[in-house]
Amino acid sequence: MKIYVTKNKDEMNQKAAELMLERIRKNPSTTLGLATGGTPEATYEYLVEDFQKQGTSYEHITTYNLDEYVGLSKDNPNSYHAYMQEHLFQHINIPLENTHIPNGLAEDLDTECDRYDTHIHGHGGIDLQLLGIGENGHIGFNEPGTSFGSRTHVVELAESTREANARFFDSIEAVPTHAITMGIQTILKAREIMLLISGERKRDALHRLLHGGISEDFPASALKDHPNLTVITDEDAL
Ligand code: GLP
Image (cartoon, rainbow, N blue to C red; front, top):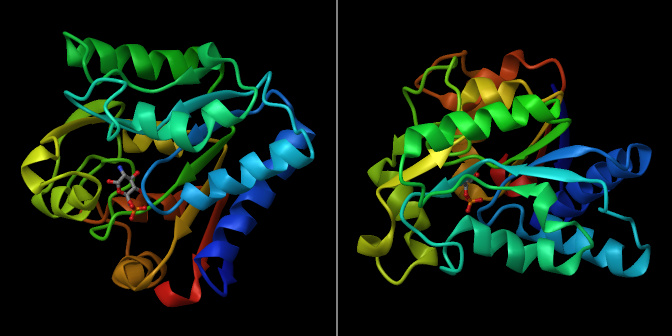
């Protein structure tokens, strides 16, 4: 595990964007795994800024998002489809057909999960997966207790996760109860993983990641066995 400690959230995001851009410039056909949430918003801002100033091209980049809520349409502002459009895709030259996000409105959700996982695999897997972390150690929407062998699947969100994400919705009742998420095994197959951890709220999670054991009670601990993990944290989370 490689760890960078940055002064604040902004520097953390800048560092993450720099490392991502390094990979993209080296391999313009990189396959990226992308995350949502408050943590990586400014990473995307830095990528957009670079696109506007340096013109780094995304024409041959493919992306797979970690997760999507069940029951929200693509144009619902709280869907992760809308998040990705707003924060990244509409600002860069990535062909929309190269961007993949689970369909939370699929009639048969289990078939959708299989399709998604198979698509990632068929494409040759993910080169670099960007990740945030939940206060309870969830990655994607893999809540504590999820098997480390899990593939893309439907999850029932923990009450604490719904409460943490309620800030993006009008009320807690509006937060979906279920989501589709890449499984932990799906995430671990990425050739490189970059985990961003910011702020006091994540202090316990970071502490447990660094000093705790590997256990399904704490999903992020699965990452400790990954051969190419970079953690970027800010001082507030330390
Ligand atoms: C959400 C997302 C995760 C994200 C995490 C932390 O539930 N599904 O991918 O990493 O929670 O979110 P935030 O960055 O807003 O703290």
